Length: 242
Ligand code: ADE
Image 1 (cartoon, protein in one colour):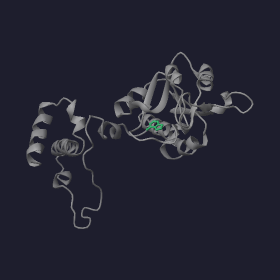
Image 2 (cartoon, helix red, strand yellow; image 1 turned 45 degrees about the vertical axis):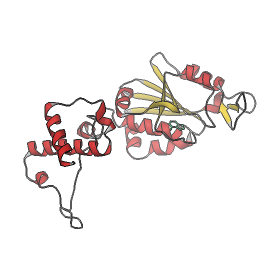
Image 3 (cartoon, helix red, strand yellow; image 1 turned 180 degrees about the vertical axis):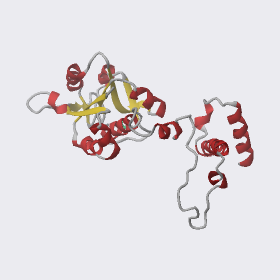
Image 4 (cartoon, protein in one colour; image 1 turned 120 degrees about the vertical axis):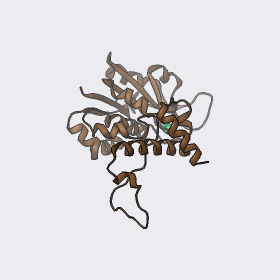
């Protein structure tokens, strides 16, 4: 099945480049995803195809009007569509949501520019997503982040093993990895990785995943449940780290 994504934006060129290059470009060429950008101005109002206006009550900047977004959605929305607004007030974007969205047939991403959106636009969408606690000049880079995170999860896009092992896949940060040379500026690599004992490698990796998560992102562990083995390794790590 092909994931279809339509993107509503005032700056289609901001997306075309990144989505045509590298892995996203190959994923599209191979037909795993169909991604199309649409210039929101096509649904703009009047002779100037206006899409924004000043905010009622006063304040800096222009905000996105609801009618162009509504008209665009009337044309693009299907029975199986999920409409997503990129907005700093949206749900924090996480890997679990990426997995869920990658299974859907059709997404429409709405990228606002300017100082924000008319509140009534929120009523037109199914989901609002934020890619982090900072403010971008528009939703385009956020849409790119979401699209990139989704399409790499599509079956056949990249090696299934990479997806299974990577950070967040099991609610933990990924373990440390090494390639050649065996010694770099006096630093070697953990002996277990060259010992040929696959069970020992697996246990070491799980333990180091737990260590890294405990030290760098303890917030990820708060809501996670642990297997007995994970509990034992986590306790070892906690002792080692004092
Ligand atoms: N638009 C502006 N800032 C954003 C953010 N952090 N996430 C999603 N969309 C945005």
